[in-house]
Length: 169
Image (cartoon, rainbow, N blue to C red; front, side, top):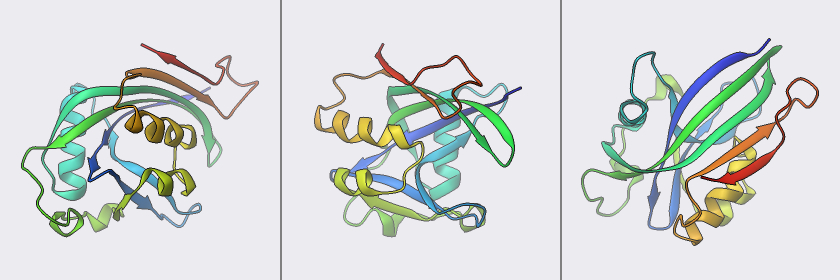
């Protein structure tokens, strides 16, 4: 039996670099992830991504395009999960002058540690979900022309019929 996670995440690009956070919860190896998180029941996904970014780093954003719908099948701490993620290209509501990181107010209680990574740095990083980093780097270079797309990633073959794949929508 699978648990179900619904998440909304922000793809924020500043001066050609992705805004990410490092998660180091002590339960697993530290990894990079996009800002965002779990949707609340009854909360529109657009509102969820705006809320999450504001809570995590104090930045007000506007989602401007759905880039990815991603299905992940994975196991963590003995539980099998089916995660459905909505990944939105988001722009700050106010122009950012100078150093973006110095203008953020990270939520340290939530272990938010923002960083800016070039596409090359992202590809070399321990980034989760892992298959997404190749799409992010390639699609940024192509100005998101192949988006939106559905990405399916199954770490549990034999437990789900899902096959790893990507589909333009």
